[in-house]
Length: 233
Image (cartoon, rainbow, N blue to C red; front, side):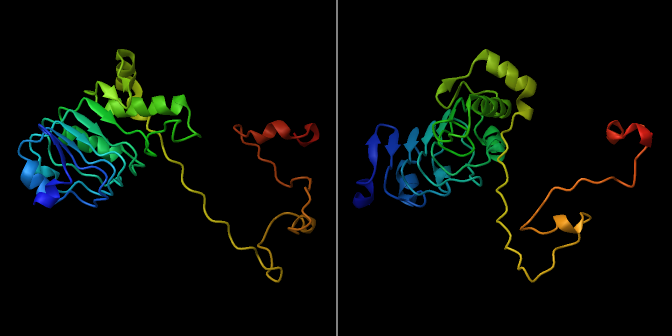
C-alpha cells in the first residue's frame, strides 16, 4: 500500500495520479481516496475507460487530459461534478457523450474538449476555421445548456440564444474517409459497356466527343429544353 501511495500526489481533497501510463483506474485509488476526494487528476496515462470512478462519490472536478478515451466513454452518476476536462483524447463524435453527460453530470458548468478530433479547433485541426469551431460550440451548448465555460472561453448570452435557436443543426459532421483506389484494370480485360463512341473508350487516348442526341425530353419541367436548337422545337 505504501508503494502505491507513493505514486499519488495528495493535497487536502485533491488527488493526482499523473503520468504513470496506467491503462485503468487503480483499485487502491478508489478504496483509499474515493470517499473524500473532491478533485481527481488522471492526466497523462493510457486510460481507455473510467471504470472504477464510481468509488469517487463526492467528486467535483475531474481532469483526464492526455489519455486514450474514445466515443464509448461512460461515467458513473456524479451529481456534484461541476468541472470536466477531456483534452487530448480520442473523441471523434461527441453527440452520444454530450447526451450521456447531460444525464449523469447535472451540475456540470465547465467542460473542455480541446485536442480531440471532435473539437474543430485550429490549433489541432489546421483544416478547420473559426466558423467550424463556433458551430461546434453551438451544438455543445444546445446539448448542455447549463454550461458557463466551454474549452477556454466563457459562454456568452448571445451564444446561448443562438444555441437554443439553431444549435440542434450545428453538428460538425466528420467526412467519410475516401475509399482506397481500385486496382488498375489489366489491358487484356475488356472495358465495361459505355454508350460513348468507340474512339472515346480507350483509357489511354481519351477524347471528348460531341454528337447529336436522338431523344429530346419535352416535359414542361425539363431543364434540358433550354439547350435544344430552334429547328428541333
